[in-house]
Amino acid sequence: MPSIPGPATEGSKTWSPSRLCDSNDPEVWRKIHGHLNAHEFRAAITTAFDLPSGDNFTYHASASVNLAQVEAAIRAGRANGLHAWYVEPAAPEPREGQGQGEREEAERVPGQPSLRIAGYPPASDILAYIALFDPTKSAANSLKSLSANAKKGSLRATIAEYLLGKRHLDSSITVPKIKVPSSSSSTSSQSQSQSQSQNGGHQNPALDFWAYLCLALEYAGPNANSALLKSSHHMLPVYMHHFGCVVPSYESLQIINKLAAGRHVLDMGSGNGYWTFMLRRSGVNVVAVDSGQSRWRTTWIEDTLATDGVQYLRKRSGCPDHVLVLVYPIVSGDFTRKVLDAFTGNTIVVAGTQNGNGYTGFKDMMVDEYMAREKPRWEKVSQVPLPSFAGKDDALFAFRRKKEDP
Image 1: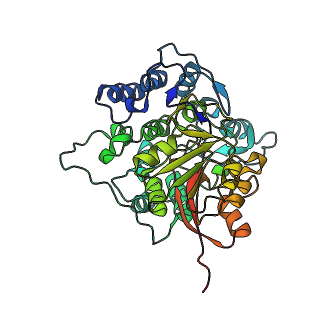
Image 2 (image 1 turned 90 degrees about the vertical axis):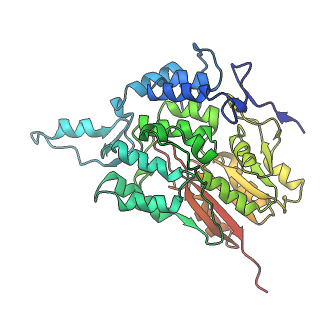
Image 3 (image 1 turned 60 degrees about the horizontal axis):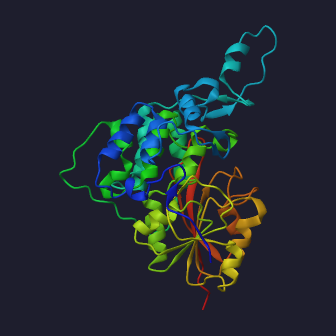
């Protein structure tokens, strides 16, 4: 069975994952964080992936951009609604002579005139959202703290209320915290947010760049209105090409590890292999399968099996002894439904949207709604927030097949 070439970054002759993980050269990350702190996104990416400084690769995804264009968009800040992540229905157009039209028009979301910008979160609230994914802390307790310290009526309050209402983790699943060595020294809050991959020794390069984008784009997490948004930012194609569609948090990796309990995990539709890479670093045995239809600038593993996922399952009796993992499963072609029907094991994990925007899995419903309606013999044991790209709302869902009544 053919495999997808990797690990590699297109445009670099020397890059390998060891440049960002387990490197004996701390200078690499020092340079990366220095560039990010200076909003030199292009230099941060070229440093991280060992690319020439004049790199002009075109990243194709939700839009087609190069690094120079992305950096220009970052420096543009809030212009043209580039940071319009928090919205609410706009008031009706004022009649002639009412005098409020100009101000109301300035607050409207470009391309979505029925929405107005509800505001922008302060840096302290953005850092509090980033802290939800600190592996040295309890994610559940951090979320409670996000709520407890929110001002009434603030954006932070709406975010905390929304995420608390969504979160669910079965009592049978426990996630240990990473202990921080007592010799660890503290740094500034911004530096801490941009050194996520080093927290307690848990290395996760995608989390560093994600923390930066939250601060750069003024994003403090999703709320109930996030599903209304139809736009994203120029950074998204770059992020997806290098790290995949969604960031694996320490908590999500540990949940999969606990559910697997020594069994093999089948990463179906594994993309560029970042989740497989991180799961393996967490001690999980993973088989990565992908059709190879999508192009990724960076691939993280060398043994992705290039084949049709449904056929792979059918040829192996549905892989009854595996845990099925679907990360950002595509909506088109009824892929998710076919894979779930072909799988015969007892544990399913899905990383995808939790707000019904139809971005992953199913166009007309969320994955937990589908499982409740179409797979009543399964129970949901996890729905925990994942580090979401600005304007997105992602979570890790997990389902177990119910035990048959005696």
